[in-house]
Image 1 (cartoon, one colour):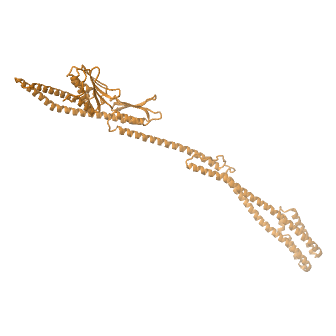
Image 2 (cartoon, one colour):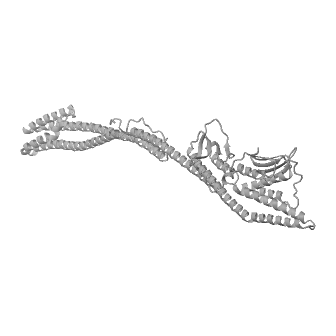
Length: 562
């Protein structure tokens, strides 16, 4: 930057100028002091000239012998350097120089008059000499006064110049240094408060402050840009961390919901509802392949593409999870993790069901063995003994009273009990492969088919493993009891056993015949079949209804509301 535009350069130049002017004033002051001493000597010497000329006049009158000495001293005074220097100065006017020359000429004349001791002529010339000396001194005094006025005005001009320069420097420092620096300090304070759009700085100044303003403005803009970028990154990271925290909470709640609980449609619906409530998706559905009725969906599907994840474990496809992401969301990972949760839950649920069925089969086998080894043998023994009793009673010529009638009733009850026991043993001996509802119902019907000519049909549209082991046993016993009642009392030609999902989404099992219908639901004394059926239905949280159907027949209806 040029010194002409640099603030510091201009201040330096003005300070040097002030120093020069101050030095000039000091020099003038010294010069004035010296001039005053010079003119003091000049006036002193001029006084000596007038005094010595009078002394010569006195010597001419009273001491003639001293005249040569007085003339010599007078001439020495008149030619002293103080007068010669005066005539050599260029600033001294010609009139003063001429008067000094005339004074020298007149002095020579006085010297000549004194040498010849011409007292009268000397006296006459002395008055003229003194007059010219006084006139000469007056001119010198006027010249000195003139010089003093010039010096005074010169010093006054220099002082005013210095004052003007100082005033200009004050203005320059105030408007080009102090005020810009104050605005710069204020801008720095705003930057400190993260106000990067600070007050405007004058970047058009062609000096150091202008360069500083330009640099500071650029720095503030860069800082603002960097801060916005950093703030954006921080906000982005915070948003991602918040999102991750939200995802972890969702995964935790989903895991807590599905862990250590029995899997059922209501639980899965709550699970999907938590996933739907994350606002990541507007549609989510789950289909379990081993439980065809477990098709659960939440939300409404639109024209947007869907994504799906097969729920596969050990090459076994347990189901499929389908979802439709909101356009502003991209959370495939959370759905992937949720899918893994579902896979493990469904797989362990399946293993648990198998384990329950195995335990049930083992328990049923034990019960069947115990019944076979105990109650069945006892009944067989009683049948043998009853046959022997009947033979012995027949040998009697005249049996007393109604002994034979009692024996026949006892035989009939024993046969019925033994037959029911054999049917119960057949039910308990269902294999593991037969423990699904379709196979179990068919096995019950097959075990009863040899007791009647009624045509019996089984229809099942309920998934194979909807009911647990305990529920399945009670269901089979209720169906068996309903079929037996139809065989004994309905006089029907057809019996239909149906298991399906009704229009309300409920599991419904029915036994319907086309017989004469049921007259009353009140059981006779000693019979408890209907009551036992109702107790079993209540134990598995279902509703049992028995009613007549038009035009003929009876309907036994068992409904589960899940």
